[in-house]
Length: 465
Ligand SMILES: Cc1ncc(COP(=O)(O)O)c(C=O)c1O
View 1: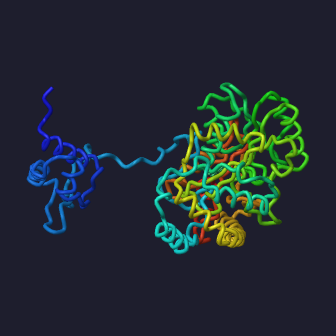
View 2: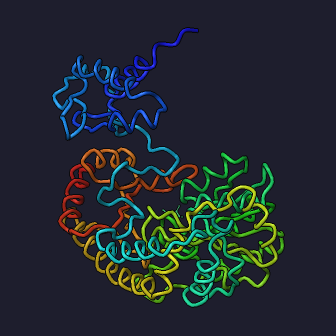
């Protein structure tokens, strides 16, 4: 087969990139020398392609300022890649957790990024980079930096009442990684696993995609209905629960239910995975001890994340496994996930913890979130103007506004999204038929109550209250 000449191939590639919007008008291209070097071609080849593209008006040479995509280029609208569309009107919220591509007001689970100590974070990062020896360039240890694993074990002891060794803590890149690690290590294809309903959609989706059978178990004001779980699937190998702030109802798992869950797990020889994604945030009392702190039989695995207490772009989380299971998890972790989190990121979190910033940051955020929770709930009620309120839950990072049973929360959430407000429809969190419609409204990064007034007004218009 005769390939087009090299310069023509390059010309085609750049032209397609411009026409599809990958390269945007005004965007600067690499220098001829750099591109030739990167592609392993002669400079003359790039020159030839550049000459064609400039001649056709795609590129503009700006002397010392380099070559850019012509800022005045009028592209045929059909050839340009359309921006990623928002879900169409009436579209269903998918079963997976949906996130807009950009930060939007009221998005669930987004911490107060506006007050994160970015300067301090940058300083710690710069200090780490300056001090990097060659060993820091090597692969990171497969299950996480020993110092970070030790810092987390100490933190869990103090903050969550958990007694564990550093070797029981596995550093992961987030909840999906922790859950996949548990599933690989402890489950076999087809095994049943209890999941909460309503519950975090990615949990049941991951389990289903990985060949397991999620069994939805109802949640009421006392948390997961353990009795119902036993009646439906006593043989399940795993129960995934959010005991501190049930996701998304924000109730905490009552003590008798905790005891019943642990009793079931030890009788059935099954496992409980505690997803403690935001247990640090409780506003009416001290944070509750973790479910794992009650476990005397080694049946509970505990999953924590830095996504909520620091920031989600970090992608650092952890899984604490019972001492009896450490070897099995080491094997699976080494095989599938070894060294998934960059050493530099881990080291930065470790220093942040060791120097006391972490504890201070959590204390500050707890106070700030208590204020934002009240301010958002009040402003929302003001905007609604109907006497209707989103009851502030004792913990968590969002409010739940219950809607009248005849209302379609997915459609309302969709319409709010089109107005730039990213609330979630409660019904999308149910595995089967939703019990009630509602809107889930993140308050932790809501710094201006006026936004919540506008949200309340928009909800009132859309619901006809
Ligand atoms: C219920 C639940 N579990 C876990 C997580 C944490 O996920 P990750 O660690 O991947 O950020 C979240 C984040 O939104 C969550 O809502």
